[in-house]
Length: 217
Image 1 (cartoon, rainbow, N blue to C red):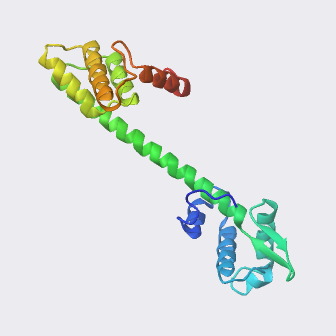
Image 2 (image 1 turned 90 degrees about the horizontal axis):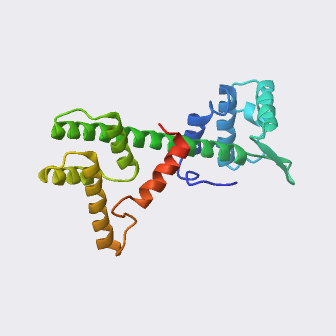
C-alpha cells in the first residue's frame, strides 16, 4: 500500500470515522469495516459474512451485501491462499489517509489565510492611525502585495516609522524603505540580494505567479 505521512501516525478508526461519509459509505459499511479491522488485528485473515455475523447484529445477507458492495467499489480485496480467501483493507486505508491529508492541508491553508487577513486588518489600522486617514484601494492592494511577497508586519512597521521620521508619508517612499531594509538584511546574511533599488525580483515573480493562480483580484 502507498503510505503517506499520516499512515501509522493517525489511528485507522479515527481516519475511518472522519472520512467514511466523504467516501459515500453508509453506517452498515462503517460497522462492517470496523469489525473486519478488529478481527484482522486479532489475526483472523479469513473474515467472511458468516464470521462477521457471529460478532454483529446485522443479518448475514446484509453483511454479505455490504462486503459485495465494498468489493465492487475496489475498497476491499480478497487474496487466495492455502486456507481460502483472506480479506484486505489496504486500498480503503490508502484512500482514507489521502483524503485526511488533503482535508488537513486545506484546514491549514484556511487557518493561514485567516491569520493573514487578521494581520492585514491590524496593519491597515496601523497605517490609518499613523497617516491620520483611510487607505485608498490601491494602497490596500499594495499592502496586501507586501504580505504576499513575504514582508513581515514588523518589517513594514519599521520601514513606515523610519519614513515618517524623515517626513515621508506616501507608499512609494514606504516601499523604497522596505526594499532598502530587505536588501541590507540579505547582503548582511548572504552577501547578495534579489532586491534591487527599483524592484524586488522575487516579489515580481511571486506576484506574477499569484495572479496566474488567483486572477487579478
